[in-house]
Image 1 (cartoon, one colour):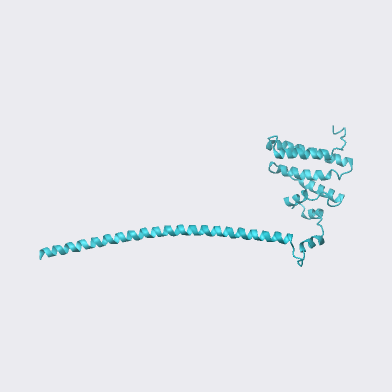
Image 2: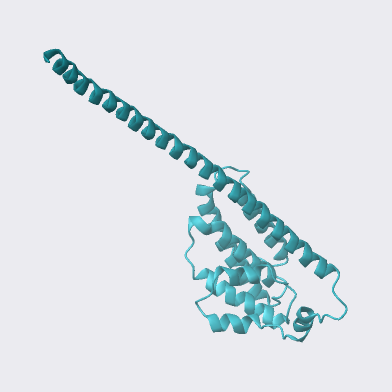
Length: 229
């Protein structure tokens, strides 16, 4: 009886150890498999997102190109039964008076208003209207304190005003006064620009010199008085 009991005890001890080892191996395998599966899934999702983004970019580019092509084709080849509303509205519309618009805005003008004046037609309107408009912009620009950050922009705006005023002014005294203001303004601009445009071939420095030369040509017929000398 005793040897059987010993054998029985050995079996009861050995069998649970083998089962526990198998369970540990299976759990380890399941953990590794879950990790590998999650990594594979993340890589697949990343590739899927990349494919979607590329496809979206291609489709949007194709749609934009197609819409631009259709617009250009419609402009070049309008349908005969389609009314050309844009051209008709431009013909019927009255031109806006820049002086009245500037008066309505007052001191609330923006850089877009100034750019609109700079790049507009210099021969548009009567002589008095052009003269009044130039003086209105000169008053607004001279009220601004000169700063280094927008010195080139300020010079371009001042140049547009003086360049348009030169052929309009007929009175000798008024023209001499304007020419004195031009020299004073450009002297201040040169003194300030010497600190930021140190290189002699700097584009902004050359532009200021060119504008000053053009104004000298414009005001070349001004008689210099003995008092100014």
